[in-house]
Image (cartoon, rainbow, N blue to C red):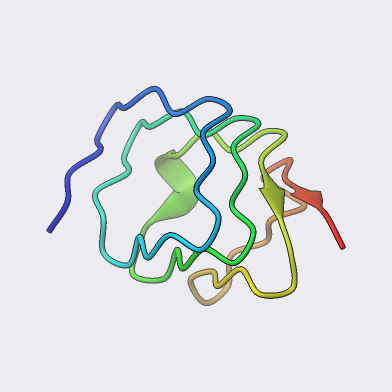
Length: 75
């Protein structure tokens, strides 16, 4: 399991990254490019995602609302 707890990933290009089960607690992914990324298996309630970009291929944990987290849909 990859541990990115508390990591500063602001503006990182994580397109297509498989982050399933990664420990992202307290990580800052603001303005990151998460298009096509797999974020399943994570508790994103403790991740700063404001301004992060996602698309229709981005996979989120069940019940997660990217808009509520301040993420930006890019088509």
